[in-house]
Image (cartoon, rainbow, N blue to C red):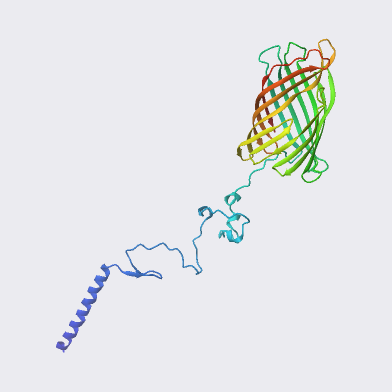
Length: 371
């Protein structure tokens, strides 16, 4: 019987040895695995990061945060739903709900207003200097001008009444060739009404009760102006025409008119008699604009004075000015300006005719600040 079992045991031992050898070989070799939905890979290859199930199958999803999204230039026009990127961080929200407006659309060009929206409008202080070349026989002037302005509906906000009380003080240096007081002053209240009778047609009506004096003699006079402003091309071209009531001894009425042309947002040409002005914007920033300009104007006024002999007389000073300046404009009409220029055609005349003379040409500096 043993002889019969020996061959069977030999075969089983041989099979067991083969299985052990095969197992040893398999352990030493890399095993191949099959990737999800793809070709087999070996164990030594790096396992890719799990990116979620294939599209179309419910499950977790890799979200892109707003800060990592590339900027996209939207087409002009209204934002329609196909350009709104869904934001999964807020239920039913969009990325436009969580980003500031300027992340998607450029801000429109700023438009500075010349007026404030409330009762108070402006507070201004300015100083002007005209030298006499250190010649005691010549005329030097230093002027200080200040005013405050408030606005009232008359009867509606679109038809404002601007009330501007002001005070001007002129300090006189010389001349020794005639007798002028050392100072002159002017106190006034400007009542200016701006009704828009028809769309595009605005009236500017101003009445200015004033007191002129040398602190010894006093005189009450009315001045004013009446102008029509027509918007030919809104914000680009305006016509201005009317009359100025100066009520001086040498000039009572003076026609005024011309055009205000703004071919671009950075240029403004006030082609208006008697005060033309050409301005160019050189800088712009949040809430301010910087302009340079050149302008021409005529100055002077009529004042009552007491002469050295004790008699009352009127003196009229007149000049012509060409100025170049820099101005920073702020919203609501605030800002500051610096000007320099040349003054010529200077005359001093008296109602009595005694002591008239012509001062020399001179330089002029002026600066002002408005709140």
